Length: 377
Image 1 (cartoon, rainbow, N blue to C red):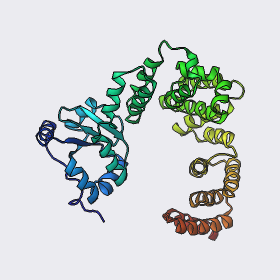
Image 2 (image 1 turned 90 degrees about the horizontal axis):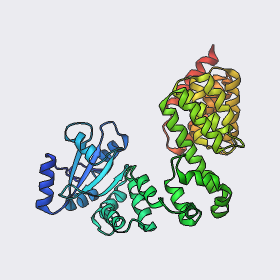
Image 3 (image 1 turned 60 degrees about the vertical axis):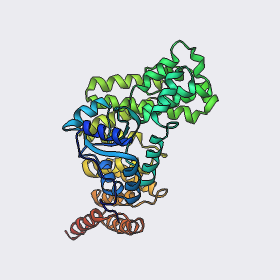
């Protein structure tokens, strides 16, 4: 049980008044930079901020404020403090300087620990930044600073890394430290470090293992696909497919199909989506991803051959992952492929699993009603 009275007491005033209060009381400001539509923001407001231990810590150590970044003073503050995601949790001194920042929701104890880090001049963002500015050519402080920027959704970390690598021999990357730089910060497929990884793929595999190298290349490729699909033009999609052929010269088929899957889904081209999805389902696909694909088939695909193929994939996955969500989707697919008796049995089994997992199952009950109506016809 939480109570707003026990939790954080947010100061209500202008930003200038907040800075003045922080100065007069010699305390840092904690700013919850939020947006009204943000789910994690609502979760923290409802579950975390009202907790007594959270209130005790933040009320005694900070001037807490909540500011909507999409209206009033929040618009200027979002620009000033480079707020790009929500919630952004900012710790600011009375001069208006950020001493620490984090992005994303937290539970009570990690949220309190975050505040402790903000107050610690040996661990907070500002101390990491100052250490870097004193010695920008030290790889340890560079990585620490770039990591802090990246964790705060500040894209300037790419400039920090590029500045460090500028003028240094490419062979520097082919080391444990160099791999750490690539693994943590290489996201642009055209960047020199990623191109060097592709060029020396076998050497990096000997250094850190092929699985690690393949995972990093896949991560950059999928990010590249996402960015191209968001542009939502055939030109962008064809362009990224050409890059995929360069990255995977021997067999680009999986990522070419994945590109078409994402583009088709964005444009509700369900026939193409179904065709391309069935090309990329592999034995090691995660149950969560398979379930997402399968549910799309249930909702949007009408071709019985494609539906039956997906149903077989889900049936195979259930031998490995005995989960409510997957059973529920399997029941839905059986229903859509007109296997009503098996669908009813599977839906009832799904509900029993939901009870064990503590998951809501209202939609499965509705599915059972639909199946029973179909059986009576």
